[in-house]
Amino acid sequence: MPEGRLTLQDRRRIATGLAEGRSYAEIARRLDRPTSTISREVGRNGGPAGYRPERAHQAAARRARRGTPARSPEAAPLDREVFELEEGAVELAVGMGVPKMVARVLIRLWLSEEGRLTAAELARGLKVSPASISMAVGYLMRQGLVRRERDPQRRRDIYVVDDDAWYHSTVISARQTLAAAEITKAAGRTLGLDTPVGRRLARGGAFLERISLDALASAERWRDLPP
Image (cartoon, rainbow, N blue to C red; front, side, top):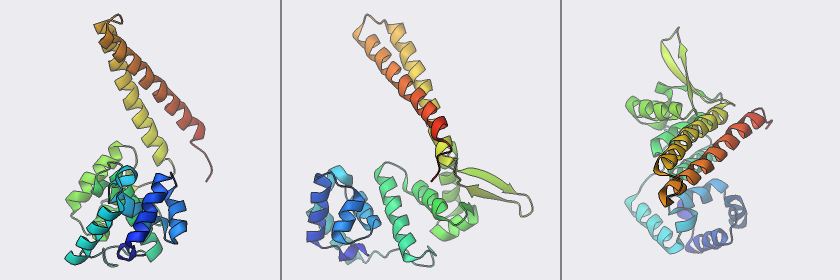
């Protein structure tokens, strides 16, 4: 349901639900709205900790006066339910610190029928330049969330998300954190464990090491978890 139909009372009920620690799905059920509507509303208005209903309502009114349109069906050939899901997921990812274009490319790939699209298909679907797609995909590949395949017949790259994407991303992140842990521990030893700074660094490094090893072990344990 379009964001413009949220009333101030709706937004106050959203704020109450957040304060009570309720999930987006619970809040959505109480308001008889899609979960994506709630996640998008909260994500674009300060996140769970910073959501203020009056301020969110004023921001929505300003957008309505400017006539800011939603993306057209031509830009996003998805049915309404999937479109709302995509928009909500992008807003949520942005609220977590993911660059918006990166989030849009990742979510579009995740919601594509086969989990695979060419750069041209992404650019057309999202109405952005090929350069924007290239930068976003490069970021996602470094995180292990997307892989690239080459179509030798048509000489084009195909970008793919599959069942192992989260596994690879988790392993890459854990290994990076493990490397940081080693550097931190070494710095602590260099400065001396009998000094406040040395102890602080050594303890922080040990913590990072432990959670990294746990994450790697957990990723292996649950890699083939069924849906």
